[in-house]
Length: 298
Image (cartoon, rainbow, N blue to C red; front, side, top):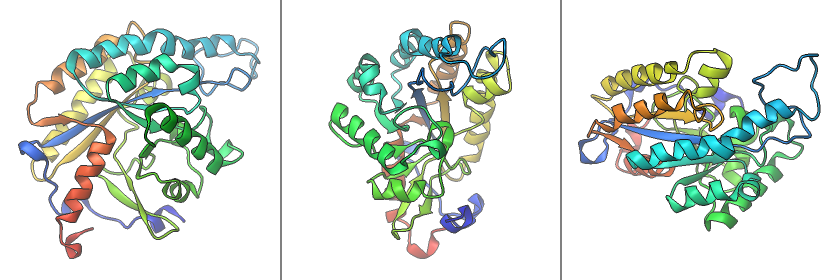
């Protein structure tokens, strides 16, 4: 299906009101991307351009850059989550559960949600068998956590024309790749059943800010706060969802972590803002849909 065949245009100002419990105005969810980069392949991203150009193999400098995040950066960030008692969502490659079991165990011990993120960090359009990659990822997460993942985030937000269909058929309830709204939306699939898209972000994403736009570390805090303030204002009539996206090898770097912590300090001070996981957002939105007359839904 083409994108416009999966969902109809719906102005956010013309939808039924979404109401959060306890008088809350908006939800923030924090996604930590934990990935495994195959040393035999071209690195998904680079911090250091090879001096002679090309794609060296092995690419030790760039592989090690990412590996630092899993060895050190993740644990530095984990202290921030623990300090503010914020639930995290681990967007994790299925292979990571075997390669980095201590990270997975730390997330499991804190009741974080596990989000399927491909089996290894690779463009889904270049995966030989997408359905198999989805299956392997689901099985790895279920084996480790005891339950199947409900949500999916494509590596680099990559999808094929069939991804929502394959995810729905594999038992997934939601996806995050369609960054086009501040509220959950329904995507049609070929089975006739829908799959929910939960608001994610390209703007408050450390990859975009630090690696592509090359901003200083403070930009993460400045942009997150500007985004939060506007969404909080927007939510005066109907609830909004805001995502914060981080990678251990980026925001877990020593010179950036304090700006990540400052985001938590500012947002956690608001008593009418909820920190939820993706599945909490999904279950709330489904309940809202059940209480809305069918004719009023957009």
